[in-house]
Amino acid sequence: MNHKTKKNTLIIVFITILIFSINFKTLSKNQIETKMIFQENFKREQTILLEKGYTVFEINQIYEYMSKKNIDKILENEYVDLKEFFGITNFDFEKIDSYKAYQSIENIPMKDAVTKVNLKLDVPFYSETIEITNPDSLLVLVNKVYVLNENYKPENLLPIPSFPNLQLRKEAIEDFEKLLAQAKLDNIFLIPYSTYRSFSYQKQVYEKYLEKDPKELVDTYSARPGHSEHQTGLAIDIRSKDHWYNLTKSDYEWMKQNAYKYGFIIRYSKNNSNFTGYKEEPWHIRYVGIEHAKKITDLKLTFDEYYDLYINIH
Ligand SMILES: [Zn+2]
Image 1 (tube, rainbow, N blue to C red):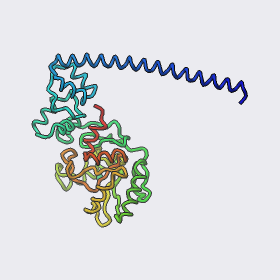
Image 2 (cartoon, rainbow, N blue to C red):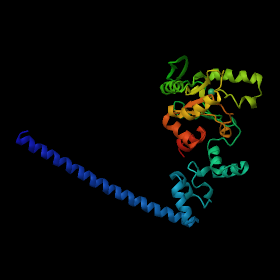
Image 3 (cartoon, helix red, strand yellow):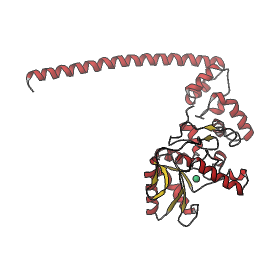
Image 4 (cartoon, helix red, strand yellow):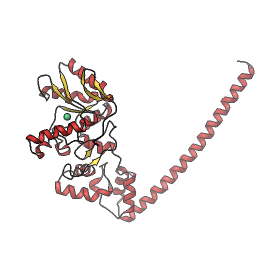
């Protein structure tokens, strides 16, 4: 490096530092201004809430637990006793009357009433359906309310390498093969027997069951077309080696302990019928990705509840 280059380099370094410090100063000034505006708004809102009759305790709880959208609604309306909703993160101020009415009829915890009303699970299954707008999401909720369009077919279905006559969405395949491999190492031999099913195939399946059982019964074990997770290419029915459609007790136990490690959840477990409307299905697993599968399993939530608490924006 000669003398001139050295000098130039020093100048460049000096200018860079100068630019950074100017930016830094501007940023801090903006930050301070934003903070001041925020504090002033906050003070103004607190005064409004006090005037409406909220206590200091209630105001603290409102800011601790309520979303911005809810706080705006609370500010617009007269005083409402919100005590039973503090801590319920999926609470939506606009549905407060429905929550209260449903909770008093069903006599269930308020948090469950909130989730069920949010997901329209407070009315008889299939009586109000909503067409799914995010069918390609790995976290899509398909149930007796949320329905897939009859033409929906995932674009990236691929055969499972070790069971090439069955198709899954590309994202689920590698983790599913890992699950099978680990099971084998643990001396458990699992055989998938139904994965992706089209709308028309599901229609045939459901109608076939209707020939032998009444509708109310069929609805507890088979999904109506458009309401089956199998149409997403993310659900798998899996059986033990010596069983024709189910898992043995010990294989089910293994699945409960291990499925989440590979991104799968037990979708219809023993205690979640009131959310799902299905009886327990040990054989049906659903891919949601490892991060979410772990959270859902740790929190012991039905996917429907998890969806409303963590995925749906309120
Ligand atoms: Zn299934």
